[in-house]
Image (cartoon, rainbow, N blue to C red; front, side):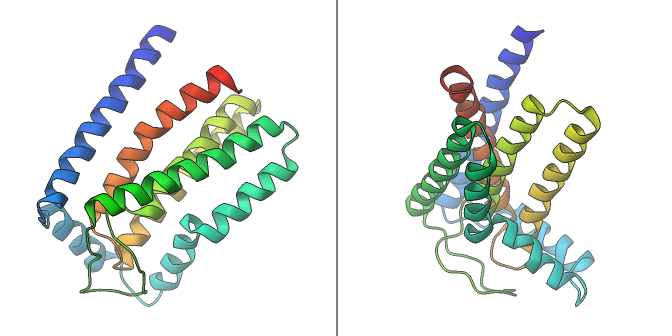
Length: 205
């Protein structure tokens, strides 16, 4: 069973990288993908409202620097095993740096047509989506590894999974990212997480 899981995670990494590179190629060629148009149309048709906008603005903050840095500091202070706290901190630093590198390589302008909030910088891949997937995804792994209570464990994992998805949707909703930006952020972070977790499992945890 362990061998199957080991092989499958590297297959997942490879598949995610292939899809990410396919999206990056289209972005590099300055293409607006059909999925970008369809994604925003679905969200704008079925979700955008005076009620939902404040919720989207609130949720998007959970993928922003202020909350993620604050959570990292709190985890480092309150988790007894400082090695775990250090891996959370290192994870945030690495994924943020990787996102900045990718954005500056591809330099995709943000969408302009339907902005609800103002954002600066490049669009691809979505920083909020990419960093959230890596940060909360790593927390999901730690919860799975260390929390013994099955009900609490799986409840927290499901809640964090929903939060990651909602952060991605909020970026499209608020008009600061294309659908492909968000999808690419998720894909590259899943690939990164597989590598990062494999390393910290072997040398730190």
